[in-house]
Length: 72
Image (cartoon, rainbow, N blue to C red; front, side):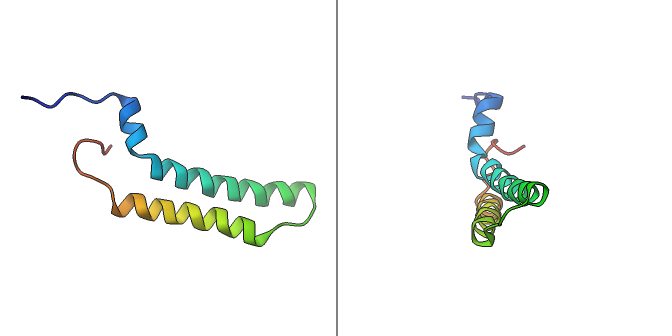
């Protein structure tokens, strides 16, 4: 039996840690930019958790990435 071709959506869902990591880093950087532009007090712990969580998620994705056709 041959392998069935996976849809693009299935491939994207299989790569969820990578997208989560990029999203968390983007959210942390957006928070820094927003406070810089609009003033206020920034929570370095919150930003650190967002960016750190994003880096951890990207690290998990890179080390646990499978080689069974889900990769790009």
